Amino acid sequence: MVEKYADLRQRVAWGAPGKGLYHPILKILPLDHFSEAPSLNPIADQSAYERAIAESDYAESVMSFSRPLRDRYQDYLENEFEPLANFEIRDFGPITGVVLPGLKRPATLEEVNQKMARRVGDELEYSKGILIRVISSIEAEDYEKEFSSLESSFGFVLKRGIACLILPVQDADDLLKKVDYLQSQHQLLAKNVFIWGDRRAAGYVMKATTASPEKFKAILLRDPEGVLPPPQMVGLPWLNLQLSEGLILDGDELTDLLRWVRIGRISDFLYPARLGGLLRLEELSETSRMPSFFVACLFQCSNYLDHASEQWPIPQPLIFGEVDNEMNLETTQEEEAEPFDLEVAKENFRDFSKENEDALNVQDATFDCEIIRGYRKLRQDDVKLRQVSNRDLVILLGIEFEKMGGDVMEQVREKDPVFHRYYFSLKALEDSPLY
Image (tube, rainbow, N blue to C red; front, side, top):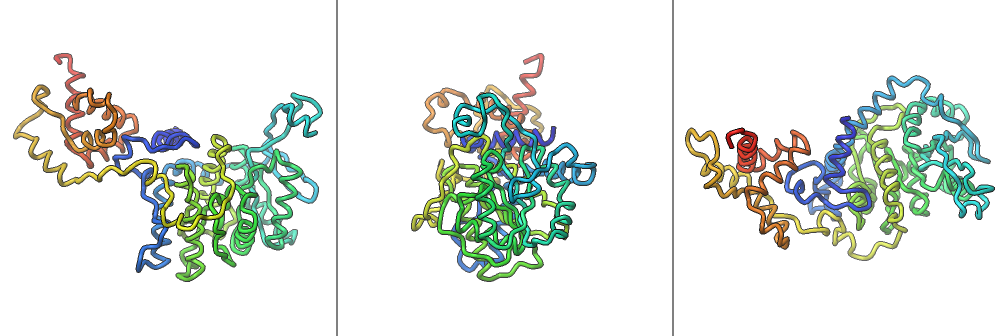
């Protein structure tokens, strides 16, 4: 229930994937969902390490809604017995050990014409995507050790309809060759490729992405070696980058990684503009298990594809000055409302309050407060809104805030105590049998 509530909070704040638009009321509040992304342009005199800290703080804030999912993933890792017992493991030509999620659907006429099935309605095996864990060793012993470590992580991902694979590669070219095979010969399984690599393997992924960014939907990298500058393109795969604080260097490689992250957020759509490039600093364990932050970002990308795959961009050359213009929906979709001044709100509250007053005089009150003024400013062109009294607007907005949970109403109280008192006084009056 907590996880479903977190998903609902996200959808209310951002809208449905593919149709994202900030909630006009909640945007007034300082919720994590509306955290401002670091500038695409570096701030003068700010070191690369300081910029990395700012990116990490943003990633933690903007993905805060995923905490229940990540907690459930950790519980699954610790408690699930034989996580792959109900899933089939199969070889596809030169690609061995693909773990299938077991999804099937009837074939369409188009698929019959493409000789993917004999007749319409035949069962076809498919997946929502394939998670490829890239390793840089081709030794059988290393493969077996990695597979044993990842069984629980794979089991959790498979339940979301995503196939899983450990892929030993020798270099970036070898990686691209094997992905090409999967996508050309088994497109129902590998239409959407999510790729994950650490250290040297992460370097292979970066090089492969630079050469063919259209092949991948998301890349999940941890402490990459052999860092390359990002391709000067928009429409890159979603990137989630994790760096160990003990290994991070304040140099050209870190600057290049920051450019990867920030170019990844250049998008005309809200979800990729918020989540398309994330960097997180933390001390990571030595285990091969998939980090919970990677899992959350993977599911966000897969969910976006479920709802808005037709909007997925074709990588295009980066237009000169595009980064300077900061193509981010949080600044281009609508003008930011002027921030509220808490001290002004407190002063208004003091002026409004009277000694020993226990209730509002509904007849005399104008119900003017910071939130009401801010909301009317956001909707100043709405003719119908002009016919709604401040009193009714306080009730309507207060109901919306309460639907979002107690923590939201607490932030309302801190942001505008006058509005908070107005709403609960009016609510108490309406609930009273004498009113």
